[in-house]
Amino acid sequence: MKCSAIQLLNEKETRAGFGEGVYEAGKENENVVVLTADLAGSMKIAPFIKDFPNRFIQVGIAEANMIGIAAGLTIGGKIPYTTTFANFSTGRVYDQIRQSVAYSNKNVKICASHAGLTLGEDGATHQILEDIGLMKMLPGMTVIVPCDFNQTKAATKAIANYNGPVYLRFGRPKWANFTTEDGSDFIIGKAQKLSDGNDVSIFACGHMVWKAIEAGKILEEKGISVEVINIHTIKPLDEDAIIQSIQKTKCAVTVEEHNIIGGLGDSIAQVAAKYLPIPIEYIGTKDTFGESGKPTELLTKYGLDTPFIVDATERVIKRK
Image (cartoon, rainbow, N blue to C red):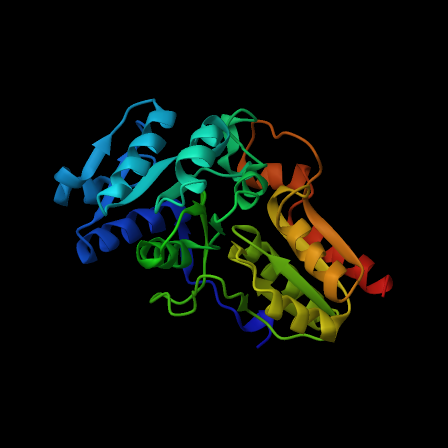
């Protein structure tokens, strides 16, 4: 398949995919419990609250307490989903996650919305760009960054049946929705190849997967054969898929709505350094905080938009 064959279905918020997914997970498993830190509306969990009020806990603006309660709930066999913004899900409560969840290998699902620059006008204090790095470094923590509404819904349902702590990262704005509606193309720990190519591998996660596809379409028109791979699971990483791709293309571009230090790019580079050293270009924020602005304008200012991916791809091919 080529990038040009990938069709846009509609535009939906990935956080809305979480809301629908957790509601369905709750219908399927009575052990699913949802906690929130005063952000029920933002997290789109009203349907869950309405139908399962006895399985919902409003903790208030007390995120550290929320993580502690969630860890305790797992002892009784519950499957707690904690919900708040990504900045408050990680940076504010890292000690509690490390000690009460990761170290104890508790079955807590840390669900984090409003991640990255596309949070927009809320600005640098809320636009966490370090969370993937923070969470993937925790022993035993699974890190998932789905690319659209459909995949976020599928991932939200899948983690209910996945034993162990999980960090699930998604976003605020309406975004391109293009994966299968039934979620059949999502498997935890298995990369999703979206297009076949021989000239370059583009590895992306989250909102940036669609930007990679847009870049792929432009590059294909220039005669460049592009392999776009959605690395929705940052950890455990699908090393086999990465190796198979770079063995063909001999170069790569990584694309993430996150600091290039500690994120997806670092994970891809570690695999390449170990098995097949290749030239790599990195698209992401460059050791900086964000700022207030419209999501699409911020992506352009910080070098994450489609033209930057095209330029990086053409550069890396020349480096082979």
